Length: 374
Image (cartoon, rainbow, N blue to C red; front, side):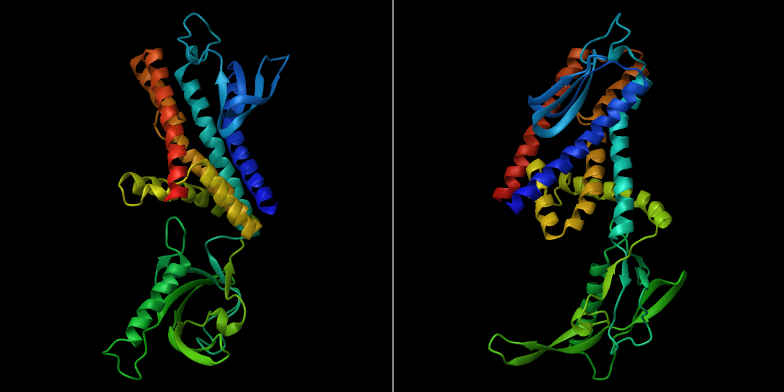
């Protein structure tokens, strides 16, 4: 029952993201005085439908929550002789409407990145405890770690803190366990840049071998050599670092690059996919997204604050691509019309978008199947 509730929550979040995107088209259309025929969340048969007596606009909730649409009067027609027709509006107005959904997704990603950074934190770690046995006098509680050996900690435009630390430990292990190692030699310390009480400080941090006591299943004990830097939970008995929580204005400033960072991660993933550097089984469609969101939110409800800006950025990047049926393709066709002074044959354009939509639906279904089967 609990798992079902988290799945339901994930579906609600996904529908909210779609609502935000389509709301962008709707708001832009209303501002530019376009005639809107229907605002729908989902595809297929309508579960709920209401038509406004004042505007004649239809609002629908449909059975398949794979997306949504904001339908404008005459958008599938030539619009000749009809001033209210969507395709008879100036190209720059239509381009604004097409971009409005993507813009709303980016705004949502920024807002929820801001909330995430101020309430939970994300990629930048802050020291909350450390061993009194190793690196005495180097660390202080509250130090915010920004760089390791000059390499910036940033999930999108830098590197991951855990990966950088593990790299240092791996190199230290290779050093101490090398056949050429001479007793008494020490692995050279690495630099760690921290912000402490508003000041930037460079720390020299050592990675040292430590004999860890292990209790076996039969009650006996043994020792294992591990390589530590003084921030080990098994030494201090509690978590050594936590994600740094930003202040109100600092969080707002960081939210912008973070939202675009999420978008950059999506773009990199797409590039790796089309260049066959990652298998298609690493991708997922709507069902995979819902299942993953439900799983991680059940483990920790705070993970929901990560998924919302990530999915928002994902939708923005995906929809801006110049692939038929997506907003990016509509912008491309409208731009060509603007340059040529006349549109491409509407029947040809509509056919291209219809085929593109079918391909997208097929792709989403196939990647979901492959993700769960392989």
